[in-house]
Length: 185
Image (cartoon, rainbow, N blue to C red; front, top):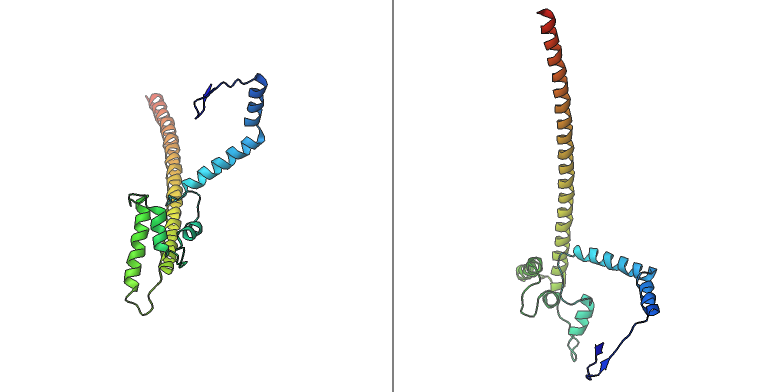
């Protein structure tokens, strides 16, 4: 049964063939491809360091939507960053997003004293590049940590094997000493 918005109750009865058809569709290759794409997207989202709040819209779409209707003036990159990474209550989506905004503000403030101050877009590119460099270094450090842990595990296993061999050899030596003592007595 299904209650419509008009208050009319509709009765839906599914025939066995309709249910079977739906099961075939849901278990078919198209569903498999959709699930595969969904899992790939889910994995990609895990790698996003700084999530944004505008869904599937890109920076360019948000920038175009925020353009002033009469003057055509677009928001600068820092304002766009704030629009796409702050919730309605002005809270940042995470600390990294806030840190990037703080870095942009700091660099802009510092560059105002220069003969040719940096534009917000230039600063954003510097900050993004620095963030990517940090991420790459972090990845490299993590890889090195994993390799070190693997090497440490291998060495511990080798040491355990050597101890076992040493104990076995010590047992043989002890039995030979005991045999020698028995024969000499």
